[in-house]
Length: 136
Image 1: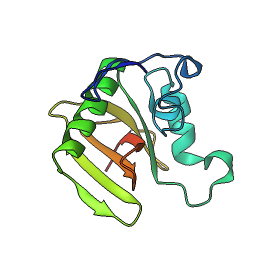
Image 2: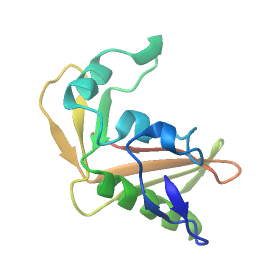
Image 3: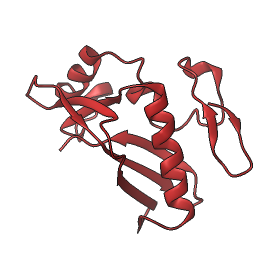
Image 4: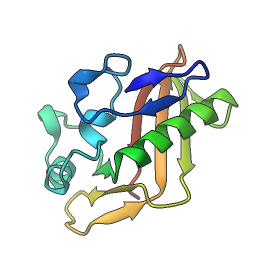
């Protein structure tokens, strides 16, 4: 990510995750970015990455960097005005982008699913922790 504006919005996303440091710890671009392949997402949906046994039953990527950026800015806007819910870990906002921005797979199925549903989580300090599409 580069060029953070005073209002917290971002100008663009780098495909090279080594090129930015501000959000290097956020679970999003490296696993859900447009640079990931559909084959990688299918593998992630069906095989727990890094041996994580409680892994979700789906995996998805943003369809473009612009869609990813739009979802990021929407998440930040929603957090700023309190649209979401408090959790023991911080804050969670799920929202509909109004158009398909994510594509991926459910576990044990090879049918590609497209969705407009996105979820963002923030820690108790208000820092973004994750941003991902939700495949229902």
